[in-house]
Amino acid sequence: MRLAREVRAALDSAPQLRLLLGHGSGSFGHTVGHKYQVHRGLAGDADWWGYAATGAAAARLNRIVTDRFLEAGVPVVSIQPSASLRCRGGEIQSIEEYAIRQALGRGLVPLVYGDVAFDDEQGCTIVSTERVMAHLASEMRPDRMVMVGEVDGVYDRDPLQHDNARRIAEISPSMFERIRSQLGGSHGVDVTGGMLSKVSEMVSLVAGKVTQRVHLISGGNKEALLCVLLDENAAQGTVIIPDSDAANRASVVP
Image (tube, rainbow, N blue to C red):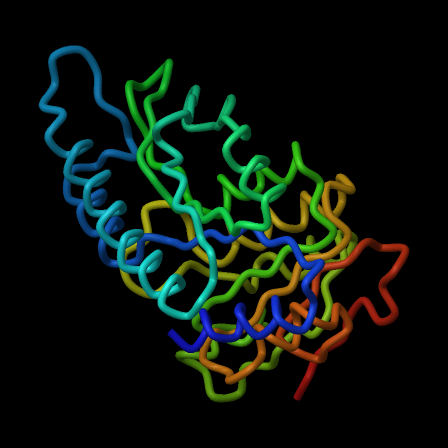
């Protein structure tokens, strides 16, 4: 609820701000998806119960998130990715943008989420929120992207297991290869990849000039989201920027 209020505060401070929100499935979707191995695909007359159950779990969480944002005064419009997602071999081929663009044009805040999807090769798959957002970004070219997670950015080792982990304040595509071996997976069940997968996806977007920068921050830090939404140079978490903008390519915060 606090994050929703921070989004509302950002919109009040910057009325011209246009936001596309997305949220993951957490234990709602990942646990069910893992149980039925939906991400590996189904074929022919296989039991598709797992596909339906995983989609329903993701939708239940989305209803909760949608209601919280509405309660905070944020005019979110939930848009179900699986209704238009088309994948091949686990990769997104297309997703309908019409409703998203219409919502943005009317001052609304479209909200998407990680979801199941039909797949032309393997029957079905699970598509993470990051991949949905990455695909939409490649078409819509946002100025910035913000990823809100459990930890405050990217660290040289898992900060939940190592007290001496150090936060990497800035990452550019050229330095990513040097640090990728230090990035691991996620805690808990995650059938869509861990931290390495998420950072790699975002680095590719910046390198391909799809977006100018990506912020990775902690949702546990009060007003961190508000600060980043209002100031692209806010000293929060980790920022992924183009090589041309990197002031210190090995910047590490003690």
